[in-house]
Length: 328
Image (cartoon, rainbow, N blue to C red; front, top):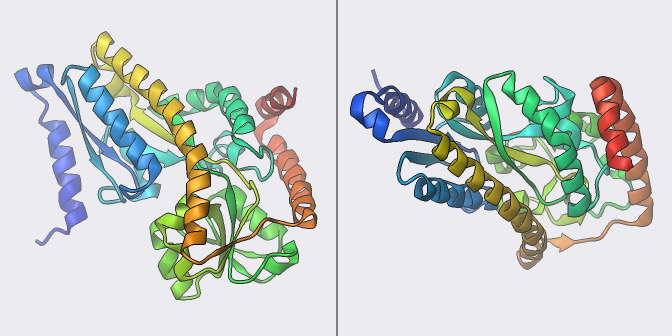
């Protein structure tokens, strides 16, 4: 029976994990890591540096093979892959799991935070809640890195949110689905790697995402305008299978935690620079980077307030505590 490349990769990864027996297992842990983003993306570049630091600091006791660009597992499959041991490490978009637990989507509430400093405060306050929830599913949080703030990708100037009425808006989480409904658009869930085809075939005709993603998908091929609105600072999380992590020697676990802390600090700085560089790159490719009007920002703020209250209602007492602490 013929096997496609992805099936062969999965079989190889499972074989590598299963093959840790005897003297070799004691000498070195061979881990697989899955991410859906391409090698040129800053998240992937940060992961590559994290892996390099882990392998160096552990003295070679942990060897990690990175599978980027959804080559091994697609984005929706990665978290489950970590939980079941298909891979030991994975990168996930936290807000994509809002239907499971609202705490995973707090960073996806539009206009709750509007700059990196506010986003870092919210991330630090939410971390214990997120860690506890991941632990219950057999995964441990290593670090989180934010995307640069999102903006609108359209083929006409956005002078009012009425522009989106009837538009098919590309979404990637429960909250972006809700946002689309609130502005009168039709939410259409599309994974990043499938965005160009979705625009080409008319599945979507507008989207809200970061400038970094816009460059990754070459948005200038299908959109003319980018409107940076500080929409959200959604975060990617690097998770490890708790069972595999806890099996490591204490000094190796410390080395991984240290490398993760450094990667988180580095990732936030990379995100800030990406915001500047990628918006410039969109402009250089012929897109018009247009600042939003006061009326658009006021309308967005009202929607943000509505969605924050809706989120608190779903998240319960813990959610109220988090928002109160953030606004204090």
